[in-house]
Image (cartoon, rainbow, N blue to C red; front, side, top):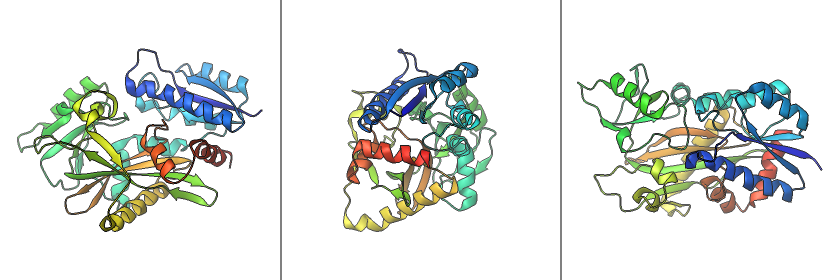
Length: 327
């Protein structure tokens, strides 16, 4: 039986919900791999690199399913895992080292998109450098490296005035979230995401999804923040939902989102699977918020819903991802 190592973040049992989700993904993927006839072996990626390298060498896997999202609870080292696997010449699922680094560093990915002509909201770097023209004075202080909306809450919302010391605000926010941040212009409108998966003949664009914000009054930003994703029982969690059913007059918009998502796949040399998150302003203009290389594969996450809507079974999608790694 061929062995597949599921390499995952080294997550303590008292970790936050977003980190624990990595272990839930590993368990679900393990079952899918067994269904496909593989022998799955779970292995945490520890910062003692010699220990991780020796464990991988001892296991001699056919392929590694890379689920590493954080190292020592920090997203800024996410590229260590594919870099080590490249060094060992072991095939692995999902995006390569360069793509992981470039897309996980959100300000850097925005700069690349801007140069390529892909629309992304205006932003202010940690050094106070402004890029793009914001449509309003509302900005969000976002973590530069962390995923899963870490650090995104009502305290991350700021209204800029000429007298605002944005660098000072970001420095204070850095201490709260434990890492660098940047300020991104808030786009009032609708929120979408488009998932992509590798196939035999190239990338396949999966059905688009829209996030719905139910009961959000004019005083509350329509925002998929940390509570909306992870904290059950909160207003945000209970009042955000996902739909993949659209009216006919949305067909043009959906086609445009899918086209831009494919451009992002090609621009960043993505592989395996990915997801692109969008906001669409009130004039119908799409803006790429971020590119998620190796997005969440939990059964209740958006990628799994897109797979199902595309008439793919979960284990069939996992098989596609494995086959793409082996190619």
